[in-house]
Length: 185
Ligand SMILES: CC(C)(COP(=O)(O)OP(=O)(O)OC[C@H]1O[C@@H](n2cnc3c(N)ncnc32)[C@H](O)[C@@H]1OP(=O)(O)O)[C@@H](O)C(=O)NCCC(=O)NCCS
Image (cartoon, rainbow, N blue to C red; front, side, top):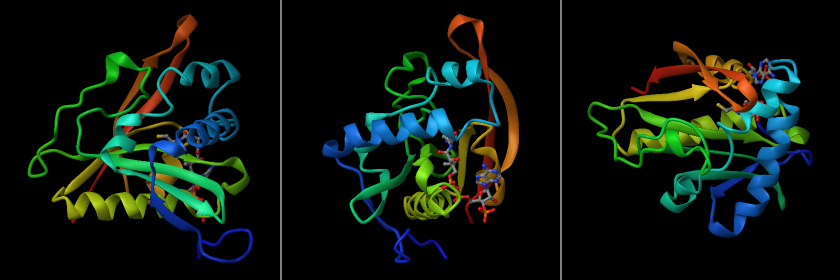
């Protein structure tokens, strides 16, 4: 059961522009803390180049906030646009082209759990919300570019590896990533 610290269920809603500052804080904490054990300190620092907030998801209304009362426990979303990963600052990775649900895979995007809420089912809850929304939009498949920290969650949700890459980061430090996918039907 996915419950908050008070024993009540987490709540969820679509993120709005007023959430952006708080979402940035949660993402920075998740990137710094929850990648430990998966990446070296240098790789974690470099990963900021390919992670973080994509405000297009909020503008599109496809980004979820999970809350425990007033506290943000996590966030994550899906997309009908071609961008597979990266934040507003990852200019080379951005492609706002609209996907075709009949042939393309919906994107699972920007999953972050506040470290205080890690391993409490927040990530799994967001995945269910995203998959349900993508399915309702007609998509029959979902893919993401996973971090090594995200891989166990995605495997637990039925995703399998398609391709492993090394994303170039600053100072010559590469960040290992895995493209993963799953059929939604
Ligand atoms: C990836 C992330 C979002 C997972 O969030 P979470 O809310 O802790 O995940 P959940 O509690 O829903 O985990 C569900 C299942 O995934 C697996 N899992 C999640 N985190 C794991 C970990 N660190 N080690 C092993 N398995 C893990 C487990 O099977 C878990 O079920 P269990 O706790 O009953 O064993 C979080 O670790 C995070 O923010 N990481 C840093 C940012 C990041 O890399 N995001 C992914 C971008 S692609």
